[in-house]
Figure 1 (cartoon, one colour):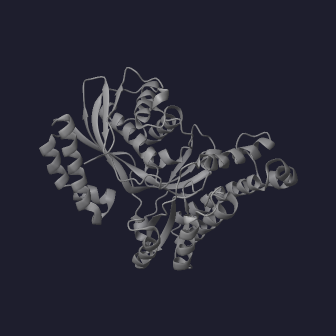
Figure 2: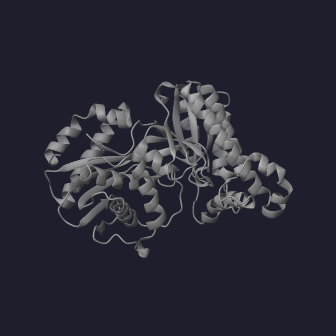
Figure 3: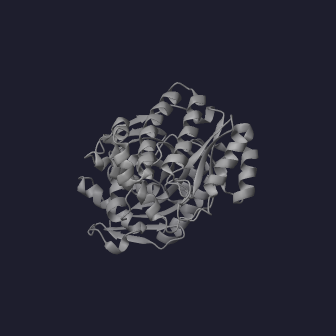
Length: 424
């Protein structure tokens, strides 16, 4: 813990730490970002002698597109875009969080009930995380925080999960000496988003942000998911992770997103099961005519995608563990093709004229065919693509993508090896 002057001095000398989190080429930018956040905190709350900084990363879904909500398998990684918080522990009942560009959220630890008027607002996530910590018997208390994020909203990198994990990491660090596990924090974050923020979601986003690195997650037992850290160094693969933001309009797409788990679970319900994880491909093939008549072809195709993508996750993990990046790339492309053809989440059926993702995928195939890999990223229906681009092709790839979708729309990222963490 330090005061303003001491903490700024620590940041100036934190090259190794910041390199591990953000990459050597980003250290200078991050030092400026951290120092600005410290100054903004002190401007609002005053200089304190117990200042600390916490970070929680965004995540990239690598394998398992729309599988977690049916208790499937996923492969995900934390990235070098994050939300940081400059914090000071206080003796009051108030949690005060000022996020850059937004009004301050002020939550009393004596009132952790669900506030319906906070649904969809960051205050609900702060309240929900504090409530869950308390429900699980952990300590909570007041603190002041200034946060800033470079996790792209609407990008499939999960800015909301990063914020939830950040608040959990702060409560863990300030009041619980770090004893709360990353898995527990992820579960609490999902609870806060489901119950307080009022948004249904699986557990993948929060788990990837909280645990960090590359993680394979099997959600068969949703209370005790199996988590495997995959020890593969992407920085030595010869490929850059490029996320292309196509700028799609996410407005009025809630029904498109909701139809995917609904249709998958409807097929499972035909067999008396609640999720597709409990159904086999043989089950579906044996009653295909009845399923088509009852639910339509799209629901059946989405069920096949689910089952196949679960198997692809296993093959991706095996390939990375063996250092077989060529097979891994093949699985990425195969998953992307399945999402496009069978899951059908690359463009919205209600708006076929807007197909930025389809165009981005075509361009990626044209540039990377036989050399890299590409797929829809995250929920789909607009948004972003994920691309693994050879280092010597990054500039060509970025120039083409940004000539179509705009400057700054191609983001060169890497997998960072830690999740929610106290920095410095």
